[in-house]
Length: 139
Image 1 (cartoon, rainbow, N blue to C red):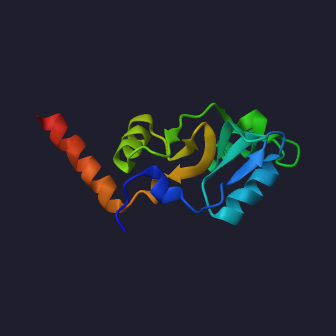
Image 2 (image 1 turned 90 degrees about the vertical axis):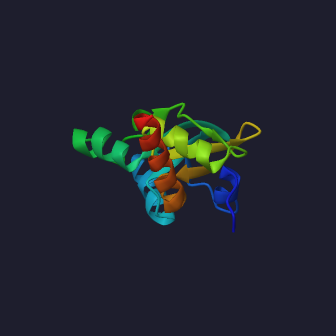
């Protein structure tokens, strides 16, 4: 299958998410259930943040906070950078690489429809993009 857009990658998947006000423990259960490195934080259907495994370690566990009493709202990245479902996978990879993001929420018509992970991008795309950057630096 030829992958043309971000939507092609995330289509048909459940969105790993928790509602604003959820505990970090609840978010960790979602991370585990979906085997992902980040979860989206929603208020109703609106995207309000993103919590990554790194956030849990640095902002909760590493600060001796309890996952049962710490809310995702306290540790999340607020208003994370997003990609559009119609974006080409190469454009999404460029955004991820330039911003040093491993996860990006995917929006379609203003609604969050998925979470793109760097693991979702085929290795060939990543290698070609890295080679392109190397060649551009030499030029």
